[in-house]
Figure 1: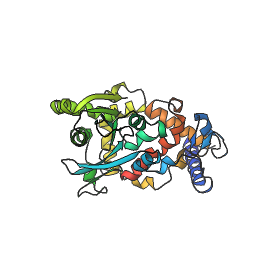
Figure 2 (figure 1 turned 180 degrees about the vertical axis):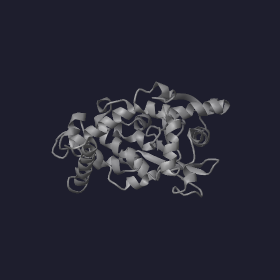
Figure 3 (figure 1 turned 135 degrees about the vertical axis):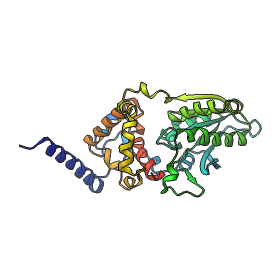
Length: 313
């Protein structure tokens, strides 16, 4: 009779071999479906599934693909990080009346591409169509950031916290938008993107009042103790977990090594893989896939891991 530990080893081995098989012999072409249920079928044979090229495109490429002009600007923080901001030029600008600037800030483990995953229904495009001057910011540690002299392989590059996001990155990006537009900004922040706006406004109240007209917080992360998912237990015991993480990781985790694997093979194409990813999402984020737009499920899963691959660590 097999021991429980042997059964676990066999299960993990089977999952690993299945992923390898899927990676090399059964890759699907389609990556978007109309309903969440369709992802548990053969995506290539299901008429409700199709190929969405946005998953492989950069932010400027996606913006141009949907018929908008984009301007790329860079700003340097006081600690020498170079951050990119993308400006979507409104189709309704008459050239005489300056449009209202709207700045969108992504959350943790994301970049500005997170706002563009719903195709022509994406919020930035809707705002641009309404006549707004739309700006997409990127924090340090993303694909769209670098440092003047530190390499992304240098541990010092990654030695920062939410404080640097708020007091350096947001400060610099808001200054950039204000200098370019000379108008007060409507700030839209998602998750941590809203959290750091609160911190920025608290640290620099006069600057925020002078340069921001309105703060729109989408799913702000403010009180972690209110979380209902497994993340709550991780955060509440972080003081005990951190020493273990530091010991085994030697201070950093080179996540980029994992990025060379095709992470789309983790959740696709077999239904049980999709189920595993869904369970993991429920445990860590406390929501099920039927609560988000089915069209972006594949794009959201894969781009989460691609963020680590492209950012470097």
